[in-house]
Image (cartoon, rainbow, N blue to C red):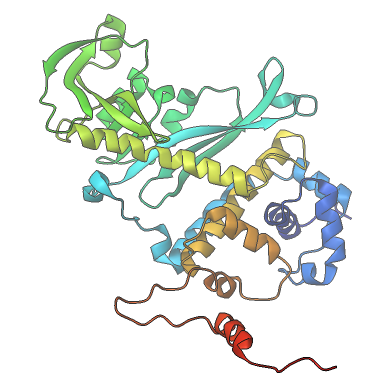
Length: 385
């Protein structure tokens, strides 16, 4: 008998752990045996044994989970093209008619005592999820899962490999490297990044700021150091503006290779980069990628990729059902309905608020409340002797 559970049973078990919020291997195995009949109806999956499930996490190649994620992604887009289409933005970005991609990474904390392969600091261990997010559709375009020992800039070229001429790359200061930016420029890719504090520039030309009071300066600059100038030989545009961050105005300085945008558009483009941070926050709050059922590198990658798969399926359900409430509440409904034999889309469509009455339309009192007042108007007579 094989020491591994089947691939279908393995994926079903990990997906159940994500949707139900199971934080241990035993929690998934016990649930599978309690609901054995329902479990076997899911593509013929077998309730996993603890040892075979653990061996599958350790030995089955996690590249399979990555391929599964992108195949499911492509299938969902093919059956519902609107799912992967550009979502209209507000303000300055509404006029953009090009691909906008935000790159960033998120650290996933691990336990050093059990997971020594992912040593991140002297007393810490962590994995890292590198992401290239399509800002238009707010869905991943490319992702890498690995240990956190690599700096973000080392994966920048890989994340941007699929970008084409005319696309816009948005990145934080961790990716502001002159060699990387010059390679983007040579490929015809536009970029908006934050300037590092230790970067030294000299002003070449001052550009008009426009009428926007939030723009402090707009100028063409070039690196002062000869080595930096060799890496990026043409002038850069530097925009300094006040940007709202968490309800507070903060002064930020951006670098871009596009000279035609207004200074405010450059700032708004960088604000769009925060879409990828919201994606990470949504993923960590709703999926089980903080308590791991396996300790080796392969098991961690399996759980991260199935967490992303569960998140993708929930996002698809939200799109199909037209869900307007919070994503965390959607995940809660899905968690409560795991073993309910009802159409989840139909359940989600029952949520929402009542439509507002049209102007001039009479408002009727709710029947239960009206019945309560009518009850006290009735004279039931006097009490008996």
